[in-house]
Length: 136
Image 1 (tube, one colour):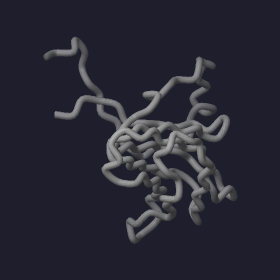
Image 2 (tube, one colour; image 1 turned 60 degrees about the horizontal axis):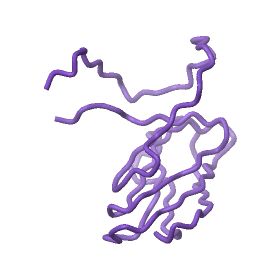
Image 3 (cartoon, helix red, strand yellow; image 1 turned 45 degrees about the horizontal axis):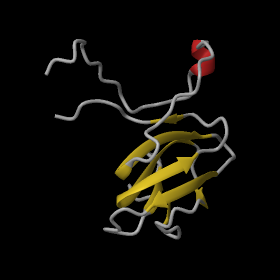
């Protein structure tokens, strides 16, 4: 089905650009309230910060596997996660999670929840990007 507009593809080489572009102030966008299964988010961790603190809650639906959150940096030459956490449970309770990284800059956050519903609260003021599009 034709969506009625031409798609545009962008690279994943993201950098903070809001100030340089002098973008107008607009209301903060929203993500799906409780996405399921495998999700990817892109965040920028400033120089000298070294951690990502999030609050995460998983609502049990299927419990096909225990939930996991991982933090990846393109600067990590092994391509492995620089941090992971599997300590929280699919019990509907909000848990604080701290992911440490030796790198500054762009990071990918991945969540896996086996089909349950995962919601996250990001640090105040932190821009978070998700890919959006039609997969064929």
